[in-house]
Length: 343
Ligand code: ASP
Image 1 (cartoon, helix red, strand yellow):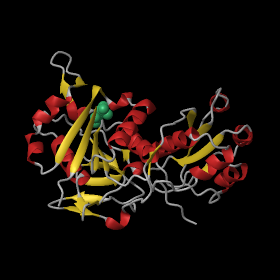
Image 2 (cartoon, rainbow, N blue to C red; image 1 turned 180 degrees about the vertical axis):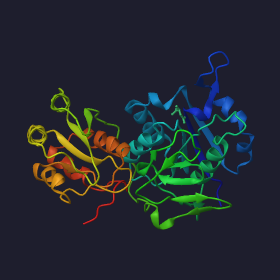
Image 3 (tube, rainbow, N blue to C red; image 1 turned 90 degrees about the vertical axis):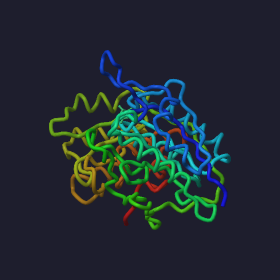
């Protein structure tokens, strides 16, 4: 059995932060200090290498440029390692995991994002367990083949498909949920993999996509949403797509001004992408009268996609510079296990 090798990429986040003694604020500190805090890492029978961002960031400062940087690091190191772990702030981890899942087509190795709610230097930190188990998952091989071949989030004993997660709790160690897809693994005495839920490994070559287009906006529905604001968003210069955050199973107001504003945008070539405000469940356009109209005018269904994944998928699809019709088809296609299409 060969010794597995894992590349650890430190981007920042609470896991590696320290309290500023004067202001009390949490600020990122350098990675060498982080590894000193976890002597357990030395005990692994794994070849562990690490890369740290020169300036670690709080993940609230995450942006598509960093996703391109991360995807490029994976591309350059893909053949050298059996698995990858990205240390990342939990605030935008679900966005980064989603983006990387689309950018890394045919990924056939584990890429596990993790972080923590308490800095690693604090006695009650959740960071040590998260990091140690994430590394173990990234290094897990059966007959020299990786068990996991997708982008995941590991947090508080659970491994999730990254593009199915969202951060739902800012105070509990158990900070993430995957409401529409089961956990891929659970860590107890052993790590139990839900083999049936894992993506099948691709036999094709890795393709790394680095063109993302962020000419997108979000229109979240609420009772009282005004015509003025709706039109301002839909008429934003250069806008290519709008996520319409709808009610329940993808429902929206049937007021004439609203439907015709959407229709005018669609006629101009703007993609309107229907994503539900509900964490659990799915968009079913046509289930109610209040969504039939959306379907009729050409609104694209997000099915059971998370908001985070919808943002990443839109940027990825628009980045391909396809025709509007082809982009719409891709949005309604399951590309990386991010949606479940039911007929
Ligand atoms: N604000 C931090 C971040 O996302 C929170 C965390 O790491 O959990 O970078």
